[in-house]
Image (cartoon, rainbow, N blue to C red; front, side, top):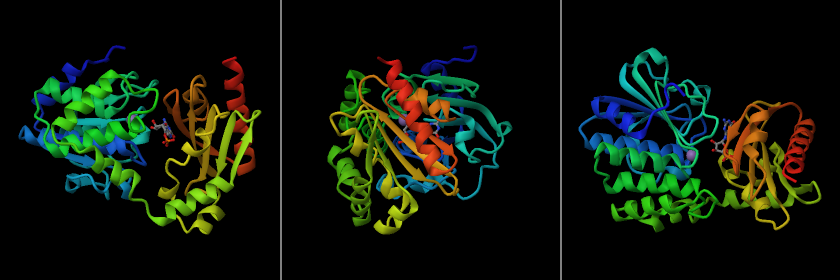
Length: 327
Ligand code: 5GP
Ligand code: MN
């Protein structure tokens, strides 16, 4: 690509910048928030001004991360900045209205690990082999010669831990472990992250899980495991949308299942959000892309329009096609 950039080119541009705005995708997750905080804290250590601008608030489960006083969310950005860094986002529209007009930025640096990134930046550093955007930020900071303090290390460790399922998913490699080692050396405490993410759920999360287990269904001779959550399930569990985050792991844990799906309502009555996961072969990013979404080969998502029954059938048909393709 014409404006494909290396980490060192991005580091050089950031080195020159005095004021940097950082953002990530709507419904931000551990990788988006963790990489954003890690980058902001380290840039501040270099004497720069760094602010994180988001379209959606930080979810409750990530409130343990330090440095959140530099996150803005209420209004879209209207100020000028030397650089905008977009993290973990393959598509400018998925940033929502957070950054405001592109004319406000001296340059836009797009740092991401999603295959199929639309390369909307002036500099695009896209590495689909990177297990997390947090890993790319870690390498960027090394290029910059920026010290990583304990708070930044905790944030980047969290980014990597969440996107690799605590160093278990197929994207976990030697580079991932090497970075994690360095981050722990810099002060990230792994148990603090495990505790915050896996031992601190509200009871409503487990009530939601109970509902989800009761709603598990199978298709494609048991190779597709699916949970469809409607608003009744949330009412019964007295749960919030956040309580359903990650429940797609339940059907994925079953031996026969190759593709796992979690389908849940959105704020619009006729739209449903699908989370897709696979194990060895099926490319779920290809399926999500067909419906206007995206992601990685083993973890992807999309939003489907239409009544629930039709949505489920269209999705199952597309997954079945992908499973047949791989045979
Ligand atoms: P999750 O299922 O946890 O929401 O997302 C899994 C992966 O798919 C993440 O990498 C996420 O960024 C991506 N993803 C989820 N939903 C969408 C979507 O609507 N559009 C795009 N482009 N990617 C998505
Ligand atoms: Mn990510």
